[in-house]
Image (tube, rainbow, N blue to C red; front, side, top):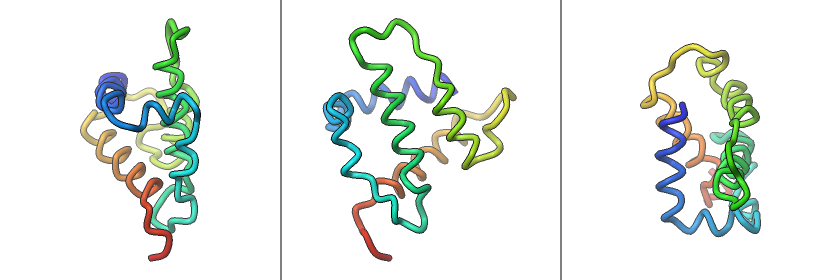
Length: 106
């Protein structure tokens, strides 16, 4: 899980998303009413994790709350068993896509 989150953190750093994390304005982008999404909870957890990783005073970060949210929506990621990074990335990107989808009605 750590390697997949590092990759996403590095990619997100290049995108517009990271400046929004500093001021927390990314919350306006969340579509919590999307029936295919996760109520915005995964996007909020990921945003909080990235905010913690990239703030200047961070020395180390334990992604407990993010892992808890992830396990809530995908039980295969709860617990501490070894997981495939590709499965994590696929689930996370799909969930983020639906949580941040700008189409309000489907």
